[in-house]
Length: 252
Image (cartoon, one colour):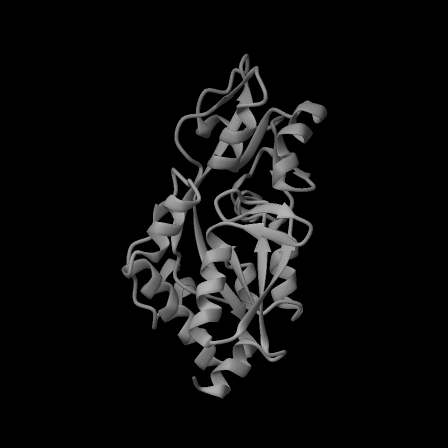
């Protein structure tokens, strides 16, 4: 293995992977500082390909997970592609596509996604999440209310008297199994493109390796196996894309 490449990825000699347990599609906490899930499997496979050990740096929300890579506390992470994050983060192409959805009270007059962005509506989001960043740009009339984490969106929604809760479909579906009197609106308000990422300053060799790595795990079935093993449904594997083209440029 090229030692210059290894140093770009892991200057400490260990690959520190930032893991976000706030997104049920990516990972779940299984103990203090411990997690399991698709992102953990991918990080482990990457470390194996580099022939180095791995250390998980576990967070309960996306904003903290992104910050860890931006500040050098972690070497790689698993984030939704977003232009705001691209100032410091170099992304791979997406590996899975998941949906952003809305939840309202059963007796709400809101029946469609198009009715959400109305003056007087308050929309609860997980602070710093991909859908927070997206809705902060796209909602023109509704007011955004930020819950501390994605897991507390429904509680904040209920406690605050807001009109709408927003989130990753799988997280909201799990929340609705424990909470009556709520319903999910049909359709989606966004497609969240989940990717791997690392700091732009780490070096072009490592960035290109990571981008090619993601295409390999998609093509070889490793990603499909991980999704099945962890019981993740409703998340589609992203199509193959050219790893030599920046995904931010492709989305523009």
